[in-house]
Length: 108
Image (cartoon, rainbow, N blue to C red; front, side, top):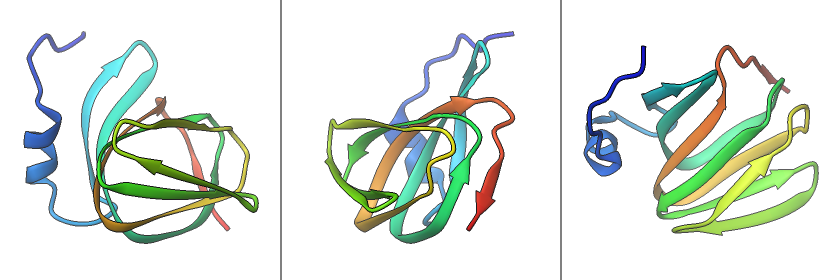
């Protein structure tokens, strides 16, 4: 069942304890929507589903198999499934991410 309560992304982000931690905002159909705190570097990895990012605050750098993408507040980007990537954030950044429920992550 869908939760019909109002959630504020920034209030949720304020409760997250540290970098690379998240809280699930909602499950919409078969899509999990999360608020994630990015800061520093996250190791290279792949997923078996596309991953959508929306930068709410801060700045995020994505390296997808050597292609560098720089995202700032308000930018969105889709990382295609199966593509090796790593992400980093030079400052604390609040990101909303969405992907298929049950997605698996393989660390490279």
